[in-house]
Length: 52
Image (cartoon, rainbow, N blue to C red; front, side, top):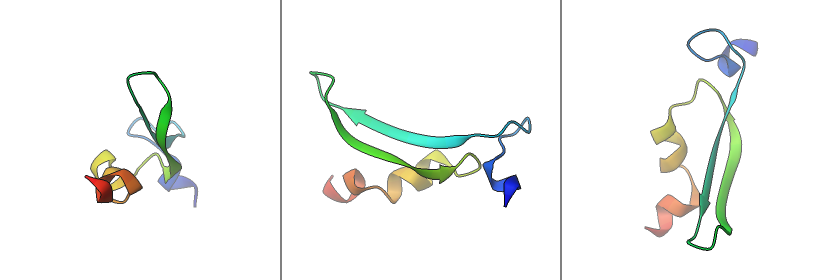
């Protein structure tokens, strides 16, 4: 539904987690959660979290 893609000020958005190394090469990318999803939830459910 539409409301899960809204931020606090009713703008539509998606959360994206991008992690790169010192050479700016992307090593992890998660782009599937709506804007209302908390950052820590995305990190806890990412592949990089299980490897740390």
